[in-house]
Length: 415
Image 1 (cartoon, rainbow, N blue to C red):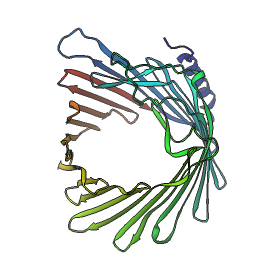
Image 2: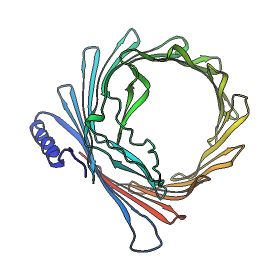
Image 3: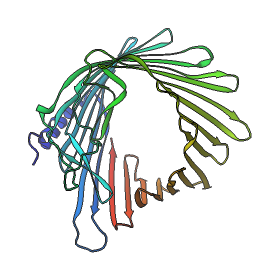
Image 4: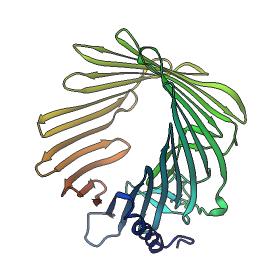
């Protein structure tokens, strides 16, 4: 039984009251989505244990005299899953925005080859963010200030197994939280030959991480091991054109309590086009302990569009290869193929999907996929635009062995 959660009725009463007071003066748009998921544990008999979930999400946008405000509320059988409120405005040459997020902590477990999220605590404050950006002589300067709970559980993190092989569900409450400040400063501008130079500095925060709750992720995250100290610096140069070749490079410097500021990685990429064949891309990643820690080459053919990607080990031996392609069967239908291979395991995954667009805004996709580490999956989805404001989604996933099925359906109303 979850304790400390907010009653759903209270939240919606407050929201509807706000809508009623703003409707006359503000432009109000948004959407409401309600969906369900059903997962019987086996198809071998009629009376079986079944997992089910009911999900809903309300997104509301207000615009009043240049001020924009947003509310995102999502919930299900377990109650409110996340509450995200934000606002944005442009004042002269400055664009200002902020976000405030509350969420229930969740943990992931896997049953019958499907992943389920289970609440492990009440709804709590997660993160507050304020961002200001401006453009000066062709350079965009942005500053993101973060105050958040650095201990908040990632809902997709793998849980440890207990002595009987079952997941150990933790409990997360207000006493489990730890709050830190962080700041991310970024600069972006164009230099010679239309090349883009980007610099990002994380002080007490890592611009390469994200803070995730169920249903939402926020770019950049405060870190627990440093408070208002330099954590990560990245310098990136992209789209530097030298004749027929486009070059890119990225430098990453990191600092931790045990390591002074040092170069973590250097990534160099090149891209060029062979007119009769297609676009060729190559990248090389170097770390302090390796001259080349990872290298890859990819080719995208002109017609039909087929992508072939190969990765190499530090010794420049092939570590994996993947092939994917999309083929138009008619103006309204196509087939997509994908396969991956490694020298040690052979084929590690294959998938085939078929897409068709039907009249009246209806599209249908069906596919089959497999991998040595997972079961065979059969999927089918349908998307339908029922009217200018109403749409429908339905999906079925079937596992022949073991015989289980998962059914998803959702309806979205836009206003």
